[in-house]
Image 1: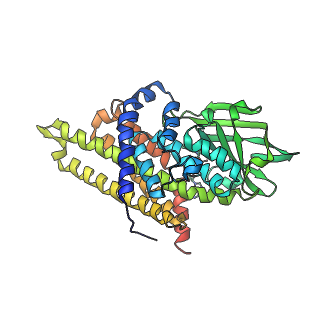
Image 2: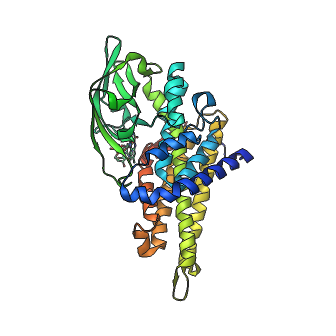
Image 3: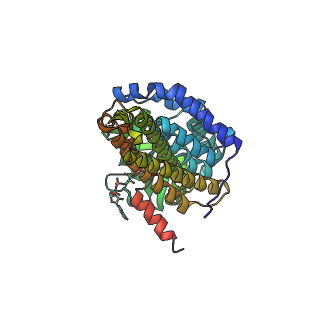
Length: 378
Ligand SMILES: Cc1cc2nc3c(=O)[nH]c(=O)nc-3n(C[C@H](O)[C@H](O)[C@H](O)COP(=O)(O)OP(=O)(O)OC[C@H]3O[C@@H](n4cnc5c(N)ncnc54)[C@H](O)[C@@H]3O)c2cc1C
């Protein structure tokens, strides 16, 4: 467990660049998209042009060639503007992109990873099923050999960005265990049934797809890494994904604090700004402390990963802590805003809704606590 870390001028420059992008390009259009329930496809692809989609990958695969602290900072700043964008980036660095980068063959890296990092492709992960959530090993989607091909049959839910995805990475069951299979251009393929966009708290701009696969045919070489080793690849990818999700929590928490500070300064009751009431000031102080603690845990886990160490424990701690803190902070932000906080005129109700999702994906926070508690005895 490393609890100290270093941030360089390069990290600070990355923070400033992403913040500037968010302020100039993202913030002006969030409300418009949220109100219209419109997925920001052009903006998600633009993240690739800006170099934010593949932050930790080498430039030869379309990445930015930066480290995991830069990745966390990028996710935090994107999330501070609009969490939905950070979600699209996170899956590339973790559950979809990481197995391709570490276990895939050169062709998969040059084609699939490169297209994901540059924004040419929007990618989606298909792991969760109606009967297999936290217990991911119990999935029943199959990939059966048929000559030189695989035939995929099954039912996936909660595939973020599934309906617009140009590439899906599916966790499937094969005779030898769990196997990751790439499905490029799923919309062009026979047998891919888009059942529905699951209505959810994040709002209609978000895409959470339910998809069925009926004899979907892909070449057998679309297996990523070794057949049967998929569970290990997923767990390794989750270590990265949890750092990214923790950073999303920090971003949403910081945005909630920023909005609350401004509101508490402007809003007057009983003849004074409400921040001067100790009951409000203490809330702001608690929020600020938890934002800092969450950021430190997140960057510490990222730093340890940058040193080449396994971060299963640290990433799970950061994810559970930072997303629980984000939920608490966003809820207090709504409270500080009073009735206005409950309306969509102000951003804090959105922060509260997305924070709830973060406590559930990349392993629920109960599962992350399980990971932490098990490792206390190792
Ligand atoms: C916004 C959002 C985006 C998502 N994106 C994706 C995606 O892109 N791809 C994808 O494949 N999936 C995605 N998911 C699904 C997500 O990974 C699952 O929801 C999550 O793994 C939990 O599974 P479940 O919902 O089936 O809950 P369950 O596993 O059924 O859990 C229900 C409750 O039981 C608790 N529980 C279960 N097992 C234990 C245990 N051993 N100890 C203690 N408590 C336990 C859980 O913590 C939870 O509170 C997304 C989910 C959300 C909300």
